[in-house]
Length: 125
Picture: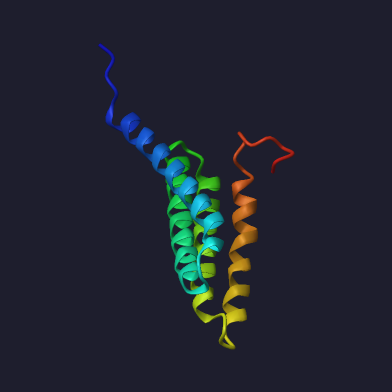
């Protein structure tokens, strides 16, 4: 009888959760334009929160597999996206553009760290 240990079971759950997060974020993001401006902002906030959750799950999975540098990159990406999330609340204020620009300080290092994942083809990096 083949048994699945707790880590294998957890890995499968994480993969399913990642898939659900990214699919849900994509579907909600593309369908947000179907609603009014007030409701649209709420949907976009949910999309951001779901995307952040997905990137943290990817970071966790990669760290568990021993890919520490790309895991750190995905963690930085989730932080950058958190700043995007926050910047939407301050768009109409003077400080809004400064907050939005601050997220880019996290994006470049995150992309560099993610590129350490050797399973990505070189042309994709």
